[in-house]
Image (tube, rainbow, N blue to C red):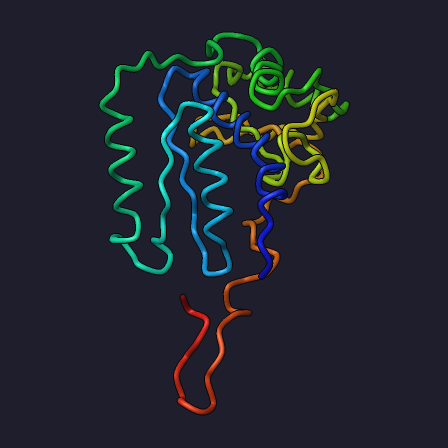
Length: 211
């Protein structure tokens, strides 16, 4: 596969936002560079340089192929970061209104301008607050492909609103879950599973594509 350093650097705007989000909580981030057989050294080096510019640690991890040994560098970096002084802080107080908590996450973490609610979501929030569930923490559910609720908005988008179409209560687990955009709630699967790369070398009889 051809090197894509420019694409990697373009995607680093998202990395910068994710690092800033963690720092907003008062903790020290560590960038895990999940290395696969199709990656190039130049791409890894580009991420390492970018992380260094952000002032955070990074570590290459090959645990998918090498098990625990492949994640040793990452583990050491996490231990070093954990030993640094931290001042962990939450984004919102639990006794704030549900919409205030949702808006705080949308604006401060996603970078959204505002939050839009369907009529059904409005009714559900009112019902939950009346039932005494308004003090639960918020667990947002949205696409993992974007900071927005639109999977086509890549990087660190600006100038967008997020839409809450439904709010579900997980009273036993202890949180409210707003559903943003058109995301599905079934477990996510990769677009191209690793099994596509697995084959048998007919000459040697060996399995290839596992590493």
